[in-house]
Amino acid sequence: MPSHTIVSREEWREARTAHLAKEKEFTRLRDQLSAARRALPWVKVDKTYVFEGPAGKTTLAELFDGRRQLIVYHFMFGPGWEEGCPSCSFLADHFSGMLPHLAARDISFAVVSRAPLAEIRAFKKRMGWSFEWVSSYANDFNFDYHVSFTKDEVASGKMQYNYTEQQFPSEEGPGASVFYKDESGKIFHTYSTYGRGLDIFLGAYNFMDITAKGRDEEGMLPHAMAWVRHHDKYENQQAAAGCCHQS
Image 1 (cartoon, rainbow, N blue to C red):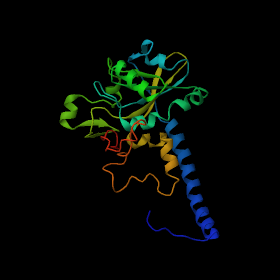
Image 2: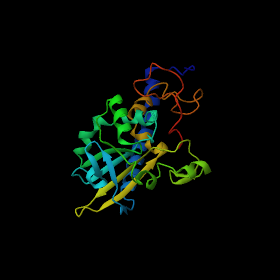
Image 3: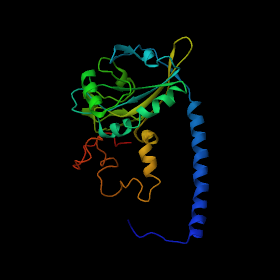
Image 4: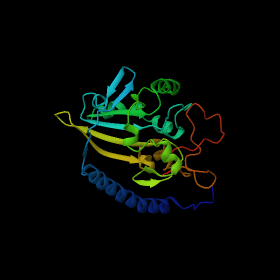
């Protein structure tokens, strides 16, 4: 840590109170942004996506599990990969505990990857996760929601990701998409976010942000999340391969 300003308790309180005003303004702006997000227009989903899940084939409609709202996390795990993305895994470590709370607010949650179900099942067991995780290997879901890229796209370096054409360091990308199902069963795509738009879902980061050193990612790391490991690998401090650090 560099040398830091040390003051009296009274001076500390004055500085903290001034910063509190900024935090409250940020909270108000975040509430306004959330309201604007909910007011965005929707798109009707016309395709019948069929996934492979633990109980067999399941449709997008069935992932709602009797609720009106569905959040899908697009987990970077491609066919033939030995394991899922470390950064997506960091985020996935937050999932299981929140599921009863989401269900209480009429929200279902599922994870989707393009890896075949057998590969997902083995990695999920290793990680000790219990959330719903299905394979989109046999459909276009990942490509339609711009989190998987064709070989031609990878070769050209022109991928549609995070609403721009850009290069991306992998054939798979992270994201989250939100859907709504009305009384007649029609499904609508209401929102998707990618890159650093996923940052808000990382509760561990929010705790790090209130510490003296913060995330401690600047300067020595090749990219912000280079320190992240699968939770069973922190005894191994070799550099993690980059995956979803790009914004």
